[in-house]
Length: 113
Image (cartoon, rainbow, N blue to C red; front, side, top):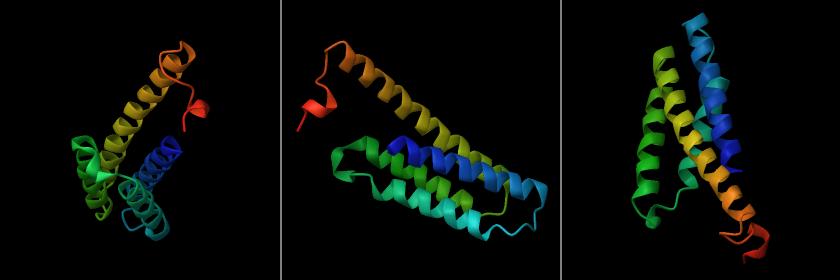
């Protein structure tokens, strides 16, 4: 689910950057709203009591939100790059967890809980 939200954020930010690059006066309302909602969903899902990592992710999400408030395609691309980097990191974690689960180093997710 986490990766899907990040996928949505990156796709929406890229869509906004493309719209702005094609026409600076483009109607950005629905794309901007979708980007903001997706970024806020990411921020809302962070447990800030769990240490420094969620706080740093929040700082990056706030940066992306600030970029989305502009009408600059470069700002939107910058936000997309930041969110894409975060997504890539989570994908690596997911891949490593699957490998560790397969090799028996960690319990299967359905065996936990």
